[in-house]
Amino acid sequence: QVQLVESGGGLVQAGGSLRLSCAASGRTFSNYVMGWVRQAPGKEREFVAAASRGGGTKLYADAVQGRFIISRDNAKNTMYLQLNSLKPEDTAVYYCVADNAVLPVRTIAAYDYWGQGTQVTVSS
Image (cartoon, rainbow, N blue to C red; front, side, top):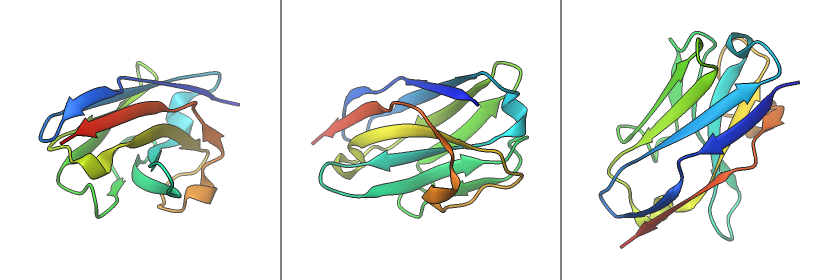
């Protein structure tokens, strides 16, 4: 089993940037597809981004394409999400997720491991 801990959330003005981190422990980090899922108040959880085991294949939700960047450092067992050009509609709890698969997918149910989440609030 892999344990995931997010950090880096906070309050930022529209147009600003944040970088989220996800530290993993418990299993070999490079054996997992890693991703981010978010949940806004009153809405269902939605896929944000994911990266393959080596980080060479990346998927993004249309809503964040071109603004968010996912990356991972397998030597540090850590994944990142750079959030740029933030909008109020990006306000949500962001969850780090992992799946013992080869390639990333947008299907949230595929991700077996979840962190506790970190709050991102974008003010207008």
